[in-house]
Image (cartoon, rainbow, N blue to C red; front, side, top):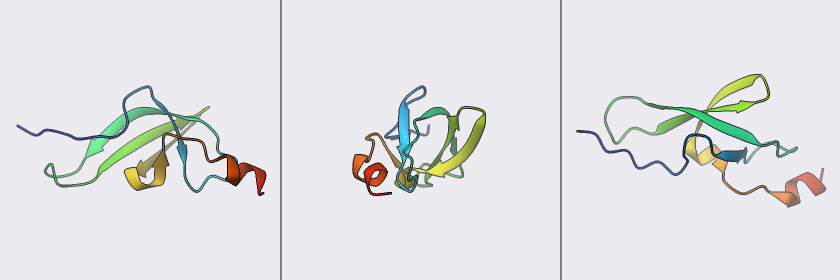
Length: 70
């Protein structure tokens, strides 16, 4: 049995750390490649766009400084 320790849940609103506009994105899928030691990838939806990201690219908090400095 594989146990996943994921930091983000389905339906959660998250932000990409590299997104200068800090647009909200919805977690709508997760993918695990291989065994439980493999990194989890999250599919994020922003309006009609869906993209896959690793956990290190995602934040539950909006980076307000990034939006005001650009």
